[in-house]
Image (cartoon, rainbow, N blue to C red; front, side, top):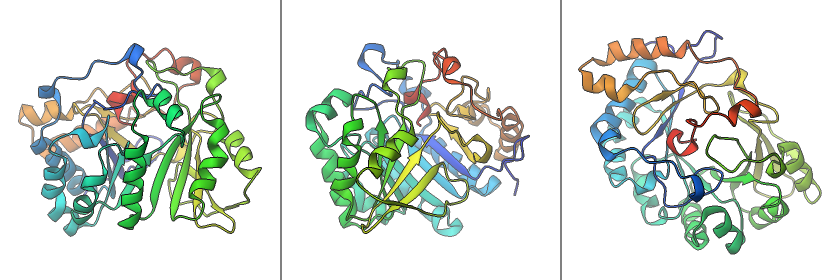
Length: 333
């Protein structure tokens, strides 16, 4: 068993895998209509067999403890249930966590089966409670489908059920208190995330609201008691006093957490991505290594070598905005 450690002595035990670089929404902070990135052709995506091999490689060679499937929107990949079916025995024998991040629009009918197949952790994106604002952000009128998915997940007792909301000044910042009020007596973790700059999104400084300001807005109505953070957590967590829910603040821009980063990412086409907010990738494409005939131990060695190129911190905002190839849709968040 090898350890995924970089030159700054950060150990990596969390893998995020993008299943597809397409989505059925067009959120302007990810894939705006006016500047939509071209999806990779289907043949360039990791196949079902390659996805299973990828997970097995990271679990068996590196003892990865958590794997999260992302997109695009992972639920629009037609073989997602077969993927979970093929990973079930491996998960049962090795005990790693299996997580999913979804926009929730097509999720509800599949949640029970996914739970049966070992889905432990679930994040659903919901940036607003207002139907018109939802359509403004996403380009689609699908808020009711998202709320249905949240309700279904709650009935199935997914814990902790995490709701992701990107805070944007002048868009949904007036709703932060309302979102907490809506879910305050439900067993949810509400995660407020800073708007991140990518080369193809609609990031502007005047739309940015820091986690400090989001927290202050919520504290105008609710008392927040700090919780002890989990190891390598990217969030600052709080209990909403006298209520059931918790809230978290994720600040990649105003107060980065690079020093404790334990994450690696693999895009839908197999590219190993060392940092979400960086133009530089590892130069390694695991799909190509699979198709070249290398065995898993040889590929594991190349992954460890590539990891040594991970930077100590991500670049500043001005530099991030120049990275046209750094696109959330392709990376998977």
